[in-house]
Amino acid sequence: METGKNVMKKTSLRDRMEDWSKIEETLRDTTELSAKNYGRQNAVAYIVYMMAGSYFGSGTSNSRFRNLYLNYAEMPKEKQYENERRVIDSVEELGAEFLQKIAALRCKAVCRRFGEELLMEFHTGGFGGLRFQIERNGNFRLSPL
Image 1 (tube, one colour):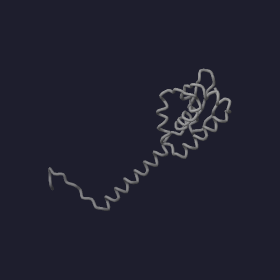
Image 2: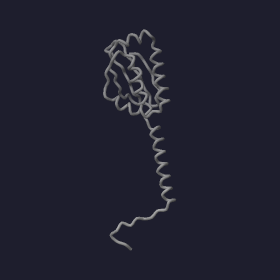
Image 3: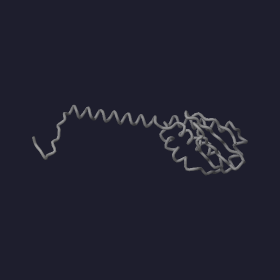
């Protein structure tokens, strides 16, 4: 036996192909997992922040929204569009008069946890606003403030 030298074990072409197949399978599974692994509640919260917040004249927010974006970015595009439409439809159901009133207002968007739900509130200092209660599965309830 040789000592002091690196002895490299010879592998057959078949062994190397099997190893490569395992690597490809792992990469494929990882991609599928990451597409499924976003937090639906957080992704919908970011959509609420974007869509509902755009109805106000201007606004500020707390720093939590940067973290919500990552979940939104991992959400499949079809789901993004579907949830964006749900938020827009819900806000527009509040009526043109209410929407005109808040369009001139500056709001502060606040996101906080309330038990299992996320509360997304758009405060305007008492002149009207919005509150979304977002459940873990992404469903939400909207109420004017």
